[in-house]
Length: 344
Ligand code: NAD
Image (cartoon, rainbow, N blue to C red; front, side):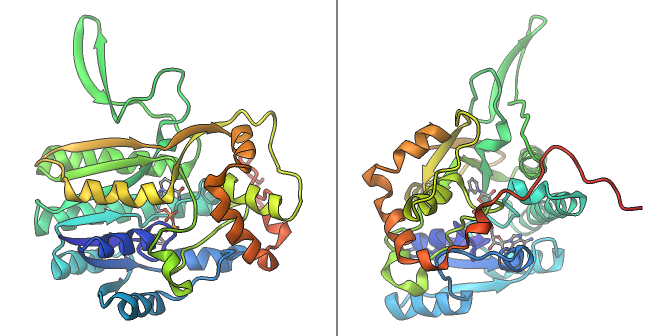
């Protein structure tokens, strides 16, 4: 199959592109390098050094003889998005290309507006580009379990059967997330469902849990193929931060009783889930939703997991690059609840 991976320079997009290429698919990637810009803006960097996209693509060709075609551009630029879709004409588009940190979206008004504009408009341009190029192109969109929030009822896969005043219907599961970032993903899901309904597009929304791990067999094959490992307070995830603290002999920062429970998924399962979705496309007009987690864990459970062999490789990586850790990057910097008073 021809598969276009949007956000192919990112933490998940790059390993997914390698996994799909290794599995025999014809793969292209697209990115505007926004993620590398956030590092400059916040003064942080991936613990594991990462190469430029050009070097990564060359290294993959050198090692395997396989080509990955790069498209450099921004999904919010409709001309770029239309050109890329008609030029490459993929069978499936895997859409990772969004601003993905809840704390980043909560820094202030500017970051909230940027996040929703980048994510919602980029996704909308993509829907139009697919609809006007070829409605059989299957969209595999990365959503997140965080879209649901933490309701006091069981979370279903995207849809809910309801009976109200004696009548029944199937509606999108009501979502009550906890950040402007997560809300951008909810808006995306609604726009995609609508596009399937009115234009007959094929779409799969993959609501993945928080991804952990830094290596897949392909990224581990050569240092030049490594993907990101973020541990800072804005982009880092709790498991990554705990690894750093464990290796440096620092206390693990469990806030409160550590009862905040999240679904988590191993990066090697992420890439396999995406492959399965691409190879088994949704039907015409179908908006398909899958919730994908390896397990549910509280922050306190995650702290205990540090003794588990599962994450030995993460600890090894952390030890190897411990000299690059900047402890101040671990400190929370975003005040979620109170916007700063305006200066004027
Ligand atoms: P990431 O920031 O590392 O990768 C996203 C990539 O998209 C970056 O390389 C960035 O430069 C690019 N990008 C952003 N906006 C773009 C635009 N307008 N045009 C072109 N490129 C753009 O993030 P990630 O962790 O790889 O996550 C990818 C996707 O997976 C996100 O949509 C996120 O919501 C979803 N997801 C991630 C996790 C996780 O734990 N990392 C969990 C569930 C879902």
